[in-house]
Length: 197
Image 1 (cartoon, rainbow, N blue to C red):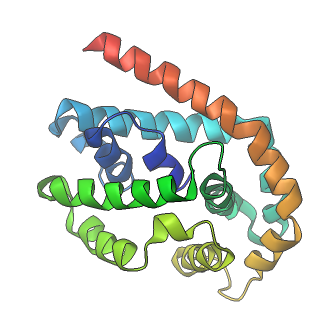
Image 2 (image 1 turned 60 degrees about the horizontal axis):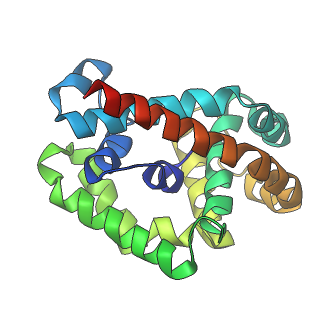
């Protein structure tokens, strides 16, 4: 899953920070953070593991894999954030806007724990309001283009966004099957984390 889903599937401000940090720190550093941030790192990993093993995500990857092969998971992650952002059973439009603003605020409040590359990304994320704009086609197109630019072995002109548009109905079905399972899994994981405290 991508930034919106990771930030939404949290139960404290510290967990929000941990969810973002996981992609930016080496494994050996995970225990150097406060407990709630460590919980966010753990939840991020649990989300990724569950996502990678879910049958609906395997189906979604088949849409992208002919074009991008092993990078298909990264594009499915971005696509799923589009459906999260448009899921009004999870949050209202106003609620998603408030969530986005809260995430930016929390990351700034915990800035002492953020590495420089995450701080730089936060500036761009906030300026263009990535989290809220995942609900728009152009927001997902921007994110998919970012993935293409970061991928070492992919042509930067692969029409991956067109594939997303052409298969939006199928991807929506994959999301509808997958996300309730993920929510339930994360709630269970968080309950276990709280028992360990």
